[in-house]
Amino acid sequence: MEAATWTAIGLLAATSLGSLFYLGSRIDALGTRLDARIDAQGADLGSRIDAQGADLGSRIDAQGADLGSRIDALGTRIGSLESRLEARIDALVTKIDDHVGRHAG
Image (cartoon, rainbow, N blue to C red; front, side, top):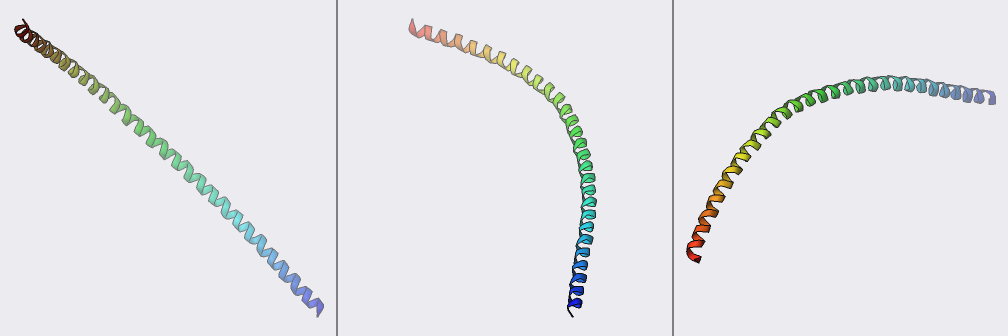
């Protein structure tokens, strides 16, 4: 009876260890496949990010050239407005000086 018990314990242990090793190898295989899929998706995502970066860079460059010319045009307009304001202020200063001169003297 004792031999049968030890035989059953041995078979149970062998089956358990065999199942453990089998499951371990299956988990390793799944991990390897998962690593390969993650690497492939990472490479794809990296190339997509690079493509979008290049597209965005070219769009910014195009807008930058247009924006530079618009800023230059605004600078010219501001310069002419400044000249007109200086002339008007000079005229007002002259009028104020005449007015003060009439009352002061």
